[in-house]
Image (cartoon, rainbow, N blue to C red; front, side):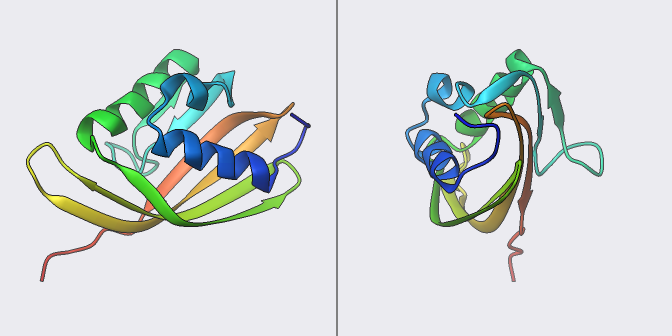
Length: 126
């Protein structure tokens, strides 16, 4: 991996997420990475710091949405910053089907993700 983000890396990350392959996902992340989830107790969501905590954060996504899938994705890069936009779909453990448009902002250092900040548009029931 190079020192900067690449569209190929962002596409590979989406593929790893869609395969629900935690080991492959974590191969993209630095040991001191930070993950900020779209929901949580603070304005930045739930923050996970360090590889073990980031892994747990990703694992919790698969637990909460066992069939989670990221589709209709687009990717952009500028230096050490990458952005992936996608539509996330899945079914919660309670049977609720979700579909939301969202994006991830990635920061890279030495070819590894040091921060992933996720945002979702929440679909309200009418």
